[in-house]
Image (cartoon, rainbow, N blue to C red; front, side, top):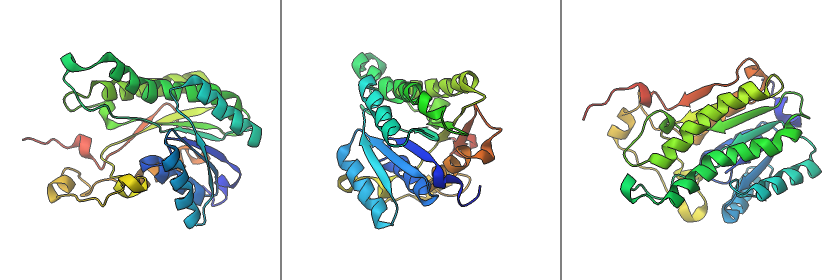
Length: 259
């Protein structure tokens, strides 16, 4: 894509205040986009804006719990009032907690909470962003899924189910919203977000040689790995790609590991 491609684009990143979301916010801001960071964590959101400003990058923070329909409506109304269009919607907001529990001990309220954020949230955001996306020349939706959609550790029922549903939602939306709107997903593997967390949660990563050796590329992933792919998938260079899920995991899911 040309250096000026995103200069006139409006990009919304849900869950954009920390981790992979903040990495993508920084990348799109560096590319010249008008970036809107939305997050349920107002403290993290304010810190994210300061962090970007220190790099002479601009973004706007709008708080929103994507599981709450009224809040999503208000978010899209604010974007319409200020920009009157949306070129890219990145459904990144997600939770992995509450902590793992055996199936017999898992409260359904906790299961529902994860699905409400991770699956209902992207559906709500896409639904209410639709009028704004339709005003853009080449709109794109990008869902941030997970390799846990395809493989699991024990007792991760809600998270795996939510990400598996998001994969299916991705191709369903692609078929339903095309040809005007392209919809794709990225499924990250082990992405180290320690340096990208808010101040009170930030930590310096420590990875053993065994951790690195689990990946054929020889290292754990970083948010920049996902951000570069997001820039491509939301651009015209990916104009013939829709309904797809790109696994970004350093090859971890294709390596057989015996214990």
